[in-house]
Image (cartoon, rainbow, N blue to C red; front, side):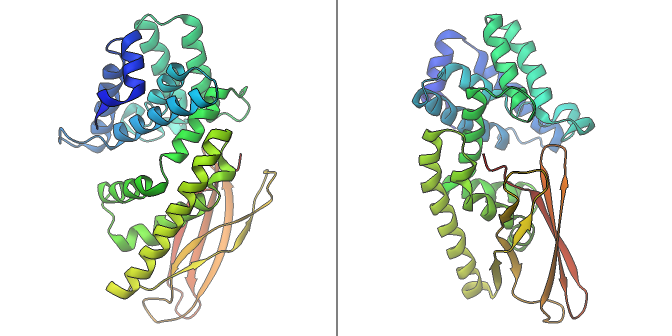
Amino acid sequence: MLLKQQAFYTSLTSRHPGLVERIRKLIEESEKKFSGSKNPAAGFLWEHTVLVASLSFRLAKQEKEDGDLAAIAALFHDAGKFSGGRYHHDQKPEEEAAARLAREILEDEGLDMARVGHVVRTLRSLYNGGARRNRLADVIHDADFLSKFGLLGVAQFFVKSTLRGRNLESAIMNHLSKELTYAAVLPLNMRTESARKLAVKKSQETLRFYRSFLAELETAHGMDFRLRTPEVRRSGHRARRLKIMLVTPAACGSCGGGWDIDFRTDNGVKCETLEATVRCAACGAAHQISFCLPEIA
């Protein structure tokens, strides 16, 4: 990651020397502690963080907001992900831990208290629907989602799948439905006009790639998957129904039977979750697909 060539890095370092490196060390150490990795090159979370910070800096400028503050908040947005050495420690959203870390570090670095407070409020409002919304939170929300789509986002999906020990079949059956569902509604999930324009292109790129990918898998490996587009009913959301993109094998691998699919939604730690139970109508073989449903801004 060519950090020193990033516009946000140059801007922040001129005002707060050493801050970016301090946050980098914090994030990389927390990720290694969680994963148990001793690989000095490991740093998927940091790579994602840099991409979000870069996008946030650019979007903030386009939206006439403070680019430096947006980049600082973005650098902390996942800093609490592995707080306590576990994911969602004590069932608390990672942004709460991120806000605490941001306050500690930024105060220690001597940032003005008003700016520290702005960063902390931004991080908390990323997950807290009842918190007062602010424009920096909107910018970081959009940058975070944009970073996960388009061709670079597709690459990150496969890198993450590899890091978590998934083969192609596992990644497709259990996780590709989420990627496709989010890609399809990406422009609707944006809160800023600048991000919405980028989202249209990234949505199209992502959907086009995955459709071609599934088609080639069938030709090259005989892995026959079907893309279904059922609607699910939402609870407590102004968009009462949402079309999802569900990837399933064309037929049951055990007996060749067709699928019955049941859906259930529930409120999780940070989001409304979908659970789809895909069950063979002939032999009863089943697997589940679960993920957070898109917010739709």
